[in-house]
Image 1 (cartoon, rainbow over the protein chains, first blue to last red):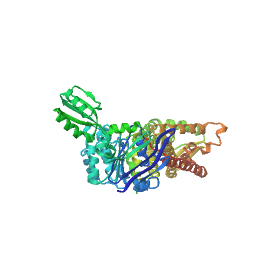
Image 2 (tube, each protein chain N blue to C red):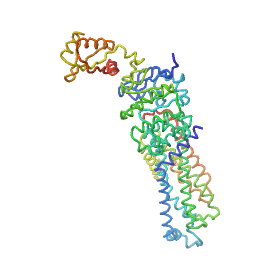
Image 3 (cartoon, chains in turn blue, orange):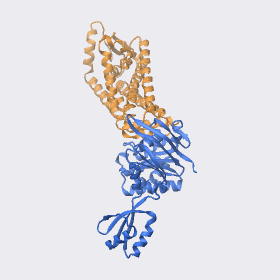
Length: 303
Length: 281
């Protein structure tokens, strides 16, 4: 079993009469890209703020690198890089000056060359002198990532890092996270309500809803055995429907246009179905396994 | 080391924020206007003041000199300077909360006490800069424009004539006490800044408190009398005591003690509040 990097145990936090987090527990291991999944208002950001010592929990403990954040705050924070909600910088300062300011109190101040190199790394090379106020949302996120990585932290906490980014920006951030894991063996905690993102990037996850942690585990294991929705585009359609009923008489489908339909299926059944349709002279134009985590998530959240 | 780095950060932030120069620009313009007015028509103003003494005293030499001009300017402007200071210092915590940068700072390996102390120190350095600029503009530029000479001060006890050689150290002492008074304003505004995420609120609140305390201090109502000696606003004009002869040392030390006590309270309350504050911005 790898080292535990984060251990959250029965964390609770109330703001007035509102219970933001209630009895949340989870563990993150070294090298994990850990998904922190939940709908908006589930308590993700409050939990993450407790991890960063921005908020004092009412009860429960947070241990990072084997030490309590409440008693070893500074030594722990020196090994963490985080973006919480959105990266906010000084609007009247340049990208370089902003990084310099945060680097100076990061415990490992960076040289001018290191800051320039980091700006290059996140795709902001040549924009060092530009004021933060003039940056697009994507550029702000990149600068936030640069600030997070500049002091070479062991643990990276990213709270909704792709929110508001264009598709290319999302892919870039996703690839960056995978590079951090694969090339530098960093541990990443990624908070998101984007299910596809968690499924694509994370190896482990916890689902949190209404302030409570509902399920925690390996993403692929949690997905195992869950129904997929298969969209089938085939011809001729009446013959395809007959073949499907012959394959499984209880099968119920939804028509999608004239040439497609979709129905629930287990992953292990797909090869057999494909073979069956071909044997019945059905021409298959496309087979698309839709959803995965989304249905699982909705099912879990609605329980 | 991290405290020094943080103080340096705070100074950089103040130095690069355009708002910080409003105060210095305002002082330059206001002092310039007063100096121009005194240069143009100063003697008639002086004659109006000295008229009541002319039957018993004869005034000779450069009466409207740089020493007197600086005193007139300070008396007119040191009431407004707290606003210029609070405009920058009242924003130091709440402005960062409003921008969201306080969240970024608080996730760094610096204790909250150090983080806030660095803001107090940077606020103090800014206050000192404002006072120094005020000194340069009023005393040094004043002496360059109006020359030097013995200083004539009219206070509640009557007319005081101070020898030219006896003036400079009084200005130094006066500016030191004025700095302490303005630093109290700075501490108050930073303290208020810890309670809100609104950047304008603490600035307005600081000025409201100064206004309220000043009104209480000037109202001739017996119920307020026990309070007056303990209000920091009562001691904000203590710099003027340095231009009395003999020097009222007891009153000066009492003012310094009251101002220091206020600073200790404001800083302690701020550190406690900020240390335990949930940062939700």
